[in-house]
Amino acid sequence: MATATSSADTRQRIMTATNELFRRQGFNGTSLSQIVKASQSTTGSVYHFFPGGKDELTAAVLRESGAAYGELVELMIRDAADPAVGMADAFAGAAAVLTSTDFIDPCPIGTIAREVANTHDALRGVAAMVMAGWTDSMVAIFVDAGIAEERAHGLSTLSIAAIEGAFVLARTHRDVAGFLAVGEMLATTIRAELPPTHL
Image 1 (cartoon, rainbow, N blue to C red):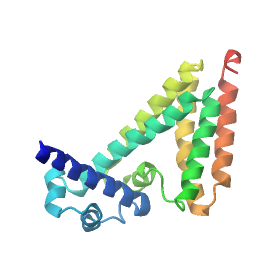
Image 2: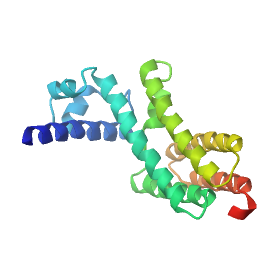
Image 3: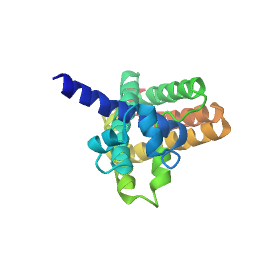
């Protein structure tokens, strides 16, 4: 039992360290030796849990962090009075995280997706699946709020693009003003699609 727990702890430590390194320096900037050092593990341990090496580990990190990030955003939006308010809340929360961490990437999915789009098709596919999951969650939120499904799909795509693009702007300018402006415009767009009974 202790061995199983220790094994699970080691695997999670490797995952957590990798995610943190990706947030700080991206996929291409992170080496396997850095992962080993940051996770206080061994190269053998990494290959034990991830026989495919860095690519397999990256795929696992993308799935785990993508699911966690998607669940957080969905929870924030669903807890709000309506999706427009929830989206504004999500942007405000993300802006606070950006400033408090000195603009470290809060979620590495978009960054890694851009890095691997033309070089690692398998990882591109994993990132695409993660984003498709985000899109489906957003569609469900908008449909539940009374927005027609076709419009909900468009709004969902717009929301993901706006969030990811706003992260690039904020981290590039090291300022959240533009990030928050994007959030406000997105919230206004969503509000305009809500049925009168939801306003």
